[in-house]
Length: 398
Ligand code: FES
Ligand SMILES: [Fe+2]
Image (cartoon, helix red, strand yellow):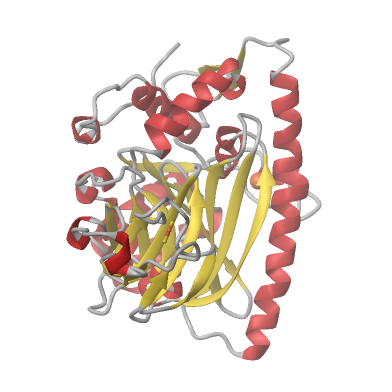
């Protein structure tokens, strides 16, 4: 695997670029409109997808030092991420063993000890309960059993994956379906923090559909990215995780160059998604920078929240930081005022019940794969999801 695999993928893109073709799924795929609007189904998605699968909740770049932490709420669960004194990443339910208060206020920081704001019970960065206020008066306790509740956590390719199932264990490698190794090439592990912003959006699947879709680019984004941007896509999948590439005519120039000289930037071009909620895109501001979008279901079926995190492979100079910040403004505008404004309108229209289905074309295989996996996970009641990841769930024809 590795560069060889990237070369093989690029050869496939090159063949499409040379022939002027795109990937085509076997059939047009129909998704019931109710899948986007039914509150019961949405709750199943939260419970069976967002609470059972690894989610990317943070990045190595923001929790680099020992005792660096981040507290956040995800799908209603308060989570504390902390790098302990030995450099190991840990995740906990951010909830005190005494009477359930949130121990750490939302945000980031650096701390060896976390003191609950209610009655000052105190935990260390390994989640152990290390101090109880007026312990003699409180009564005898087995402190060893009263630490913070751990969540499965894994740091891979510069991303911190967490499963929102308290106390469970999880086979992260199997769920990545071989994708982890290739993601390492993006270099997020050594990237530098630039900034973060959030955007409110429509139903999480309406929003996510847009990240897998190049078909809309020169149409919806004609005023921002311009009408000349390509709309052809090539999809490569590792289980539910997909890379969306563009078979651009410019690729044909590679055919005359030895493979060793193919630039890494070309090999890594496109959108790298991680099921169910991550999209990694590269942009340029005097050098590449990453925008990583983390989508989360919002407060109801018709709402989502997207966190956009910006990382730079090189330490950004003050001047470059300003340029990336300008791009951040532009990208927030594109996503909020073009993609999500359209998505919120889609949500309202689908809720009318006027149409029973929406359509994903043969050229929209990415969306087909995504919805196939959502369906498969909703239909899987057992706790053990690994058999699902061990085989490919292909687009279903309806
Ligand atoms: S709830 Fe945390 S110390 Fe009482
Ligand atoms: Fe878009």
